[in-house]
Image (tube, rainbow, N blue to C red; front, side):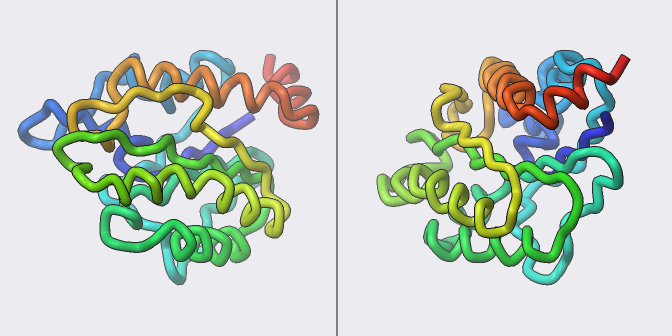
Length: 187
């Protein structure tokens, strides 16, 4: 199965320790870890700073799967969780094919996250995204229980966080009957 991973800097693999905006090595990024874990092709469509598109449709996964993980940059730019969820629902409604919406892991106190309100908003995304996904007929994975660690900035995954995210997502995908069966047929 071919999986398109559409997201922001955490999908891209941004390393916040990098002065010039570099990435973690491939063996530490969740998209590459997921590909290795599942034994399938995972295309990284992450982009630093990406917010939920207002007019674009999600990429068409063809016969594969699209994983969408966005929303943090929307919160960082001042949107509340409810508006981010409404934008996500409108974005998902413009797409087609097999899709999974993954809620971003909650933010943590850090150099980019000084506001308790921002942390609360990030926790509020998961149930709102779950309802939006259900209304759009899209699968939903809540990442809060995966214990994804962030780096010092409170936003970007640490290398350990990337491993936890990939492991949680792989377990989720295998637990969905039609996806688990497709993943088993990959060889």
